[in-house]
Length: 94
Image (cartoon, rainbow, N blue to C red; front, side, top):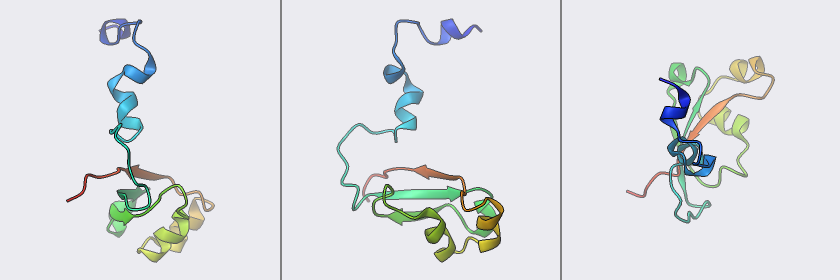
């Protein structure tokens, strides 16, 4: 199936469903200081990830947080301190 049949050319990137997902899936206002997220680093399943994080991901030192939550320093060093980490959220409150 051609790509043009999947996504009409007259839709901008902001109106495509996957674009909303990449922005976090929600357009409502979020208090980032109290928001909850799932963080899932490379090969994290081996070390008990994904794990929940509550706070502001924009100011988070991901490498430090990963080390404090059971991700081995050897893995962090393997990626030269630039561990790729999937961030899912913000999650809806319970």
